[in-house]
Length: 262
Image (tube, rainbow, N blue to C red):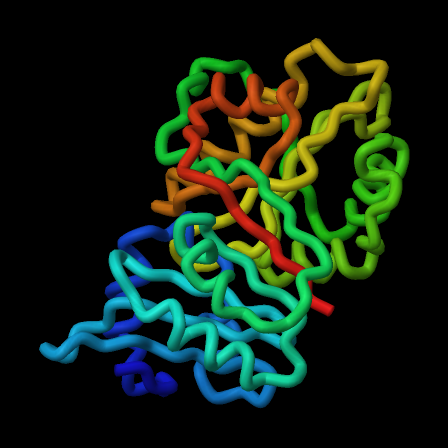
């Protein structure tokens, strides 16, 4: 049986979601931030005959994210999505979204597949990270300026104001290294919740690559969150970045899929 969840279902919902904190980063974060009964956000759950919650489907704006611990009613979830005239996106772990995809009737615009990795233990804690500083809200302008000078982040839509807000609210954290008063490398989290956080914007300037700065920022960042009992996750499709992540302690947990519909 599938039905919409309410705040009375919260304990059962989080009992399921916290079995995979990194994999459920977005669902956990959205529920903690906005709950179950917003106009722009709704949550459905599938229950078995014993009343156990087996799967969850979250709608945030026009995007849907499913999670299931085992077999689930993929067709039922697809019917909920298809009844929403505003839906434009489906995202989630490949083994789950692949079961829903055949039942979605709308024309597919784009399908993207990325490696999804998580870290529960830092392998390089002996790194000297004394040069790494944690960013304060007033550092937001310099951080955005740094990202704008790195080719892979040059088209980022983040602004200094959004960056400052993320640092102030705890939605994100950033660590950086300076040389001669100038930021030259950084690593951040985003979408932090009580159980997990996503690593983003791992970015050394071109002239400062292969100095180990990105690794130092990552080690400091990951050690901090893990000490708070949070799992870390990230997306990647860059072989050079993959080598850094895996040396630090990230392990692949599958593929994350992004479907865009017309």
